Image 1: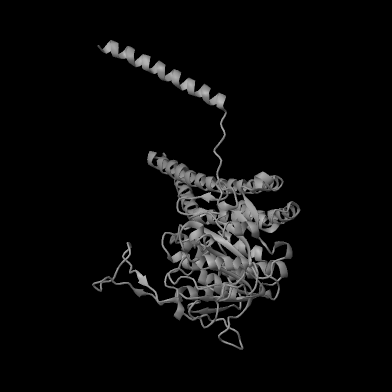
Image 2 (image 1 turned 45 degrees about the vertical axis):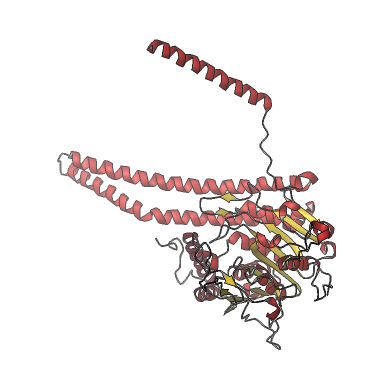
Length: 536
């Protein structure tokens, strides 16, 4: 099948927008067809997640945008599209990306060219060999205005210093999946030449906090970042415990210290704060099975190096994994336009009703446009899919009619076979026309359903934001005292009521229904007993 048959790619119509969007469409189709493996996850982030991050970070004119694990370049391209809408040109920002996988790096470069973008995409391992460094000092990481990323979840051996573990007989020790267990050298000998790990050195067996710290180090003093990461970064690692506290002496885990550092500030070797500063802006917990190549539940981790005064000691927690806030499909879960509206409205408003109203009004128009655009493409696809079959069957019907007409003109009798041929051809054509009509109707109904869902979500959001008790089930603005009380554990159920209430039932109706069933059961028992008597 040719996926692009529905798009006019002639010279007169093939602008960079058409070519670029066509290429992105192919990338998504390839990702969809490989969603069961790890390949798709290496280069493609669901468009809906990209949209949420780009629109919350709001790239400004002359910003530098960086993606340290850029895949096919989706974040960078969407940042450029955002700027085209807001500033009239997609070249209002400068784009930078790095990708380690050669094939994916090539795809990203082609993607930029087809979109008419002068992006700089470098190849290499971002953690071991970062390509974007300061022009005057190559051992300093270059600073950017905005960073957007979806790094490889929980990458093992991220510094490439692990060695296969061996037993007493010198034989390699393997994991359950057959891959070798690795041993790592002591951290005291480690030295990052780029000095990115200001908040602490993460374990070599898991690269999540290595990527996060690289991203933080890549932001300028006013920089912002939106990062897709596994939910484990929100709660992994334990604080220090003394014998008086819980009967044991336990040092604080590295991941706990790094997360605490993001919230309170970095400390020196003596444990003293070098600067008291919270850079965590907001956290959105996403549903599981949303990303290609993994079923691990993800989250969006927003960083702001220069938070507004009224938010400096606060973090917004959004629970977007709530039942009904996404569409469950057999292979992957999906965020629909109205789901995006929910998340973006809470992010933009931080619970402020008036800001939410303004945001919803703007986003409804945009989302309706997206729905209409998607409908138009679906209609084009359906028309293209059925065109050849309809033309072929129409020709057969015309030939059958011509054969009958010729017999009539010649004054000869029409045969049963000729009538049967016409009947069969007509039936086949009608069947195909009905299939096409059904698909067109379904596409229109789906678009109407999505538009109604947006209206329903508008009412839902305004209701939530005006009810202090109800909003606790969806999001929370958490202050530093509460974070410290929870030992800087950012697991969402500590701050948002994620419990799904059971459906309420009318007890009177339930009892009546129960009695009705019991009555029918008793009657059935009597009937069976009477039948058994007759058999005897």
